[in-house]
Image (tube, rainbow, N blue to C red):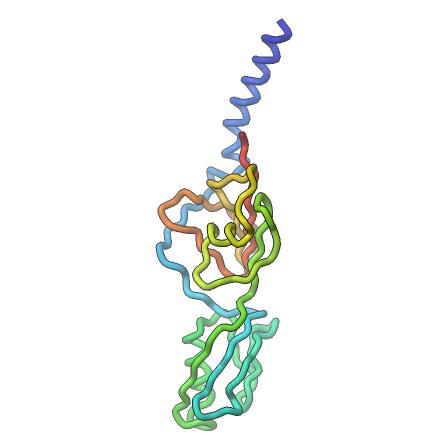
Length: 192
């Protein structure tokens, strides 16, 4: 009799957890990625860029984006960089330098250091890691030396830098889940 009750309880627990597990993982609200190509990278506080103004060595150098999202640039003062792509920043610097300081400046910008991303949960080595352009969740997990044996490989919880809370994303969609610098990735635990 006791064995039958134990088996009934175990069967009920398995059935209940199978019904609850998707809800706990946020399966009803899971976002299926719909972007085939990586979103454009926008600069933010903590990024470091190398600016070359051809023919003007005094303006060429490395500049860091301040916590206020600005780059202190010689001659023109502070230039807003946060939220801009590299081509947009080039246009902004071109407009500020021309024609008062440099006649038709030729400008090139390379990102030297991206803001890091953070990965938590069921990965071998959680922590902050350097971002690389056009990075996916799978590449971020590989950077953290892979999943643990308890990891849920179907859903990832992602909080973008300027969002107040994390949201669940499906890793089984037709497209990859893209990450941005400053994102926090959490790999949850699977149920059974």
